[in-house]
Image 1: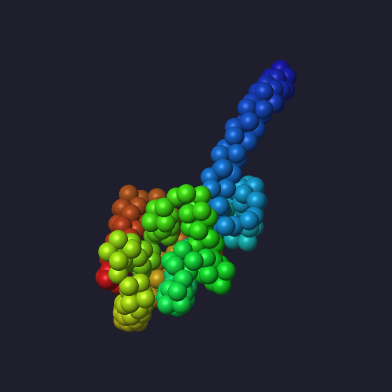
Image 2: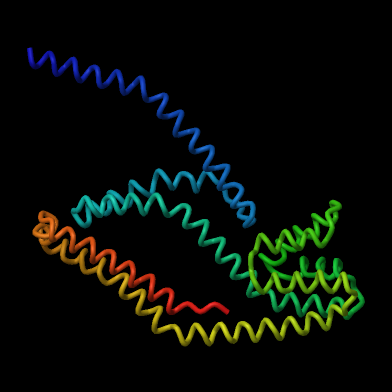
Length: 281
């Protein structure tokens, strides 16, 4: 009788699973399409010519690989869960990292673009013609972003609005300074070569100051990185040696309270170190 009951329960579970499977597949496909649309927009902003489907597939592949790797290598369910979470976070992190690298490269090309544009204007070209020269001569991403500005202007959008859009997209203080100076010079009739010369000096001085600040705050930032990583590394090493080392604390109210306080104090220390080693200019 018990055997028949178990068979009935198993058959019921299988039937329910098969009835819910199409709904689950439909939900996954709908989520996948939404993610692909979001990633397609982000990749268009970066002129990234890969298919968004490849990025979305990582959401299904990486959690399995990292979760299985964490469990097989470290024999711990905690590391399996951490591996799954890391696999879920990596696809978005890839795009964010690529975008930050693109912004950094654009900023590094800014001084060369200013000097080249100043030379073009001294040679008798207009501002728009100078931008076209930059599109042809400068490497990506500067050529790509300015090419978009030139294309939008040819479609009838005012140059000021095109530059303002690019400024909001890049969100770089130094480039915002260049755009604002350009707009003011076009409205007031100032000499653009002189404006570009002053901008070059200002940007160079600003970068020298930032490099000096990075050098002076290097010790604090390294200390913050070490103090952030050290407790996690220590806990991982202890658990790999003795899985039951923290049981005495996890099984008592006082121990759990002390662990919570330790995590809170560690987080506060990380925030304070980060705050003290960051100087806004």
